[in-house]
Amino acid sequence: MVKRAGLKETTVAKEFTVVIERDEEGYLGASVPSLRGCHTQARSLDELFERIKEAIRLCLEAQGASASEPLSLSLEGRGKGEGVIL
Image (tube, rainbow, N blue to C red; front, side, top):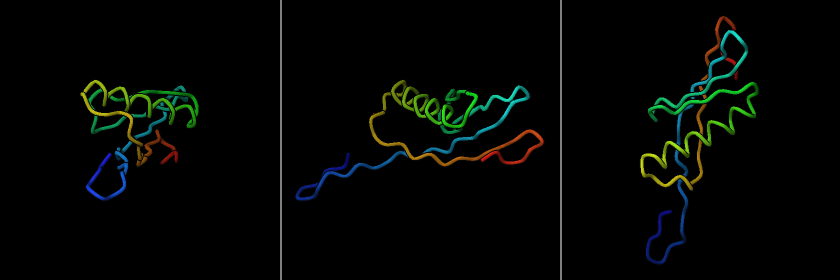
């Protein structure tokens, strides 16, 4: 939160790029290059989005940063022989 005298509180979203790949068994994997060790996997995109948001929050908490602020995700897809999966 940003607060200045005489102004309203403003929440600034944290932005992260998420790389999504599909493996040979059909699982989707997501990683955040800017957060070391931040990755997860799931069968569906909906489940993957929820899991990567949680993984980001946990990584931020482990680094001592506030994890309660909104997250803004920029997605980059990489498919194995099938192109971008987004």
